[in-house]
Length: 215
Image (cartoon, rainbow, N blue to C red):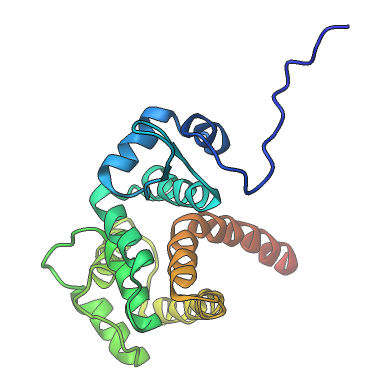
């Protein structure tokens, strides 16, 4: 009888060679070595001058870096900032959220949020960084949507904002329930990058449900 060609799976927690880390994460060895050189993947435990063992914490880190780079479009310098905050988290969860958001937003312009968004934020009474990258991005998005004919009146923008505030409360509940600042940072980053497509798909499903109920 022919021997099976299926490789046995390593038990969770067993030391991993870099080739096994590549197999577990689906990231090529040369990319893992690049992550190591750039300091976004922590070194393994040396076993010789040219070899090291890796563990589950490396598996999680590689998955995080891959999500940021491939799905979030975050440059390696930004990933380095995020993993630095994971290893030495800011003292408060609010500062932690700001670190994650500013890094994920990338460099912004100096145009500010624009009058429409500035009035919206003031009317809502939200304590936010009005000149920050996300407010500016919101201003650009609103201008582009209106230019394309989207009916974004002040009332519609407020209704959208109030709905997104409820979503944000869920995000923060998950982050604040984390056992440590590092885990909270991980949840914020992964949630921002990987859950945005989920929210977009949920919006489409909810539109279908709402339309069916009104029909």
